[in-house]
Amino acid sequence: MSSLYFRQLLAGRDFAVNDPKARGMGNFVYLIGDREKGECIVVDAAWDIAGILAIAHADNMKVVGALATHYHPDHVGGHIFGIDIEGLSELVAQNPCPVHAHRLEKDGIMAVTHLSSSDIIGHDSGDIVKAGDVEIELLHTPGHTPGSLCFRLKKALVSGDTLFLNGCGRVDLPGGNVEEMYRTIHERFNTIGNDTIVYPGHNYGGESDNMSHIRHENPVFQRLDLKSFKRLFS
Image (cartoon, rainbow, N blue to C red; front, side, top):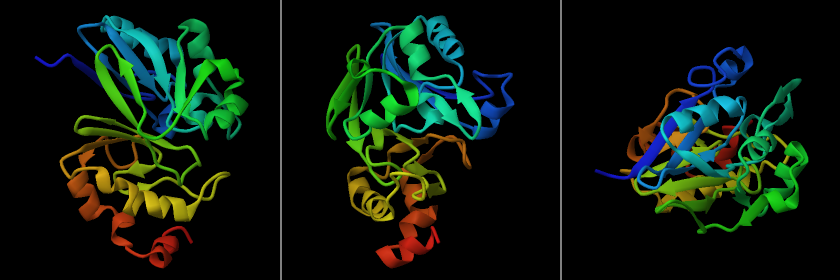
């Protein structure tokens, strides 16, 4: 039996259950770790830190670190759209642990969460973060933000706001770049096998799907040249 521990949690359903704003945003949070060692890492901890920690503890798992796909407050905490959102600062206070993010995203996370530089470990693409003996590969996938990350775990990809099942992240917010998103979709994702299961950052059209189906159905993969890709965002 595999020792891999993997849980996909939906805001408003599995945690923050009495928060209509969390339900409306539809964020996914992930717990990934090693069942035998009882250690896990939380991906994009936001909205209800006590609730997320309670789920891990009920599974006899200790949260030993946090991974951030990008710095937007609905994924790391902070203030957005007139909403104050719990996030990494509350996690570090309640459950002291390091936060892992791409080095280009570190300043953005500090700005919205008010964590200190010493709280956050800045990474490069290809770095490995471990929970017990489970290895999580960090893949730099800019476009939505300069330091956006996806996390590869054997035949699974936690894609944050870089890739949804039927679209991709916005490129019109601060730090967004349509040309970088095009390169991510059509070049950087070339290393992702068709049998990989994609787990996105929001419940926009579903919870997961295999990369083969996404490549066939998702319109961002059908726009093969940059000019036509840009028209998706016009």
